[in-house]
Length: 305
Image (cartoon, rainbow, N blue to C red):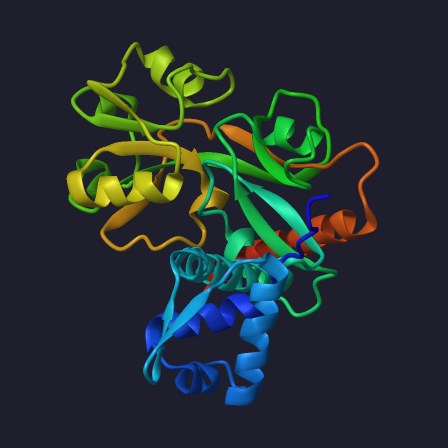
């Protein structure tokens, strides 16, 4: 009958790692915070469990055998991996808290993203998860996120309405439209036009503003982040047309928001929730409504002033 060997425990491996670096049992014992006598007993226990010699003595020094050196080398790697896993576990524990996941799509400059963080009466914590263009509704339905906000043409039947809005233009402060005080359709003929997608949506600027005038941009650049689009216009010029509410809070240094020439083009923001949302998700949606109303009120005051 073959002898049944026992596995080593972490304390045995730690001692072998310490022996590999120190070469002396007394020093290794100090490194693992035990006495030399306890270290000797632990070493013998490890050898008994494995049924192999792990060390040999050379005068007052102790040397690991090939088997002992192998265990020490692998054990040291295991120590590092274990420490890393422990830190990851602590990190995961700090992130493991109730949170409503809000879809962060192209309109990443919308005021509710930053302002939500500053509220002290939220029902739960909030996370922002990046989703692709036109994937907000799907991300909520598939439970990748819990809540989203989309912009729709005014002609689409109303759903969970957050706010009415209208389209405006954004240009650099040295653009003729900035001095003129309005964006005209012909301004895009020689310009780079920054937009989230290359497929125009009915009810927005292409069909309602540019197409009736028979013009199209000299160059179209897709950018799936409004914050990035604004940075590119500031640095290199160009034009974009966006809902006014999305431009309420982002840094606009060097940029000018101008109305579109002619009749306003209305759009609408709506909140996307699942059919049976959790109470925290409904409460978060209500908090966003209050933020939008507060922004609308402050904007009205500033215009009157």
